[in-house]
Image 1 (cartoon, rainbow, N blue to C red):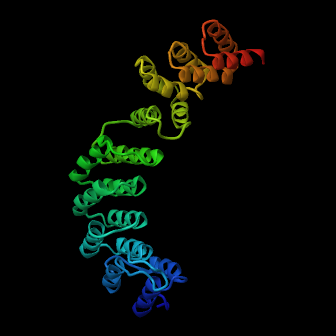
Image 2 (image 1 turned 135 degrees about the vertical axis):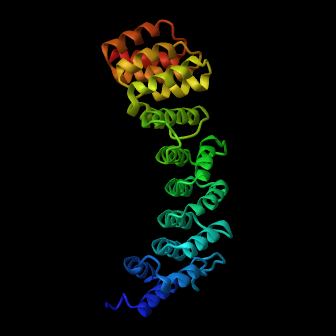
Image 3 (image 1 turned 180 degrees about the vertical axis):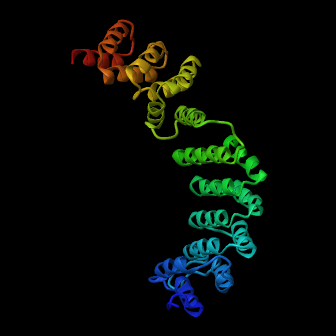
Length: 313
């Protein structure tokens, strides 16, 4: 038996993990190699570590979330009803960090007890950070409980304040993937791409999200993007047309040019400017012909200058 594997020395490692700021992470790594399923020796000390107080040199009244996260991961390896209940109790009472929420969700997924699904759903409903919410969704999918299906569908329809658009879209992707993995959705991967583009366009139309995100998504989709883009252009709403116009920037000419013809008819100057920029980026005979044709009817001086410069080069 090695020094590390002796029960008394495992407890020393645990004490180091909880109390030593410098050696704590190294002790956690050693314990990860040693803990076994149903390891009763370390179970209760790890449960206590979920609420470990801050180290003396840290002026905080909050628990030590770093240590709590390590303890959660180790409890996930040990498993059992006691570990499950302790993790659920810690998630549903008091405060916790995103780091801890991610570790606890992963641990509950490793334990694999579907009874935790209701508690995870409760935490998911209260949590507003899309990064840790994504981990909670992944855990729900692995637990495969009917409760998860209801919650995951609510995740995709619940309208709330958007903080970080890309994290929100990652969260929605995870929810769609989770529903498919547990057999609660007949949507294909292609359907998910269409949903992803629609969400990117919605964010763009609302003035949120990354500027090039819709264009990157549409470029990955190719002709699959066309129906959604056409729908936005045909809506007649300036903000929707503008979102579509910005989304076509990276499309191939055979896909983008027919859309440009309609966008150039829009009364919205920003939409027409985006369409003009698309023409100049393509720099093909067809795009030059269309630019020259539109130049005769364009009323905005800035767009005219852009097209004239393009045609001179």
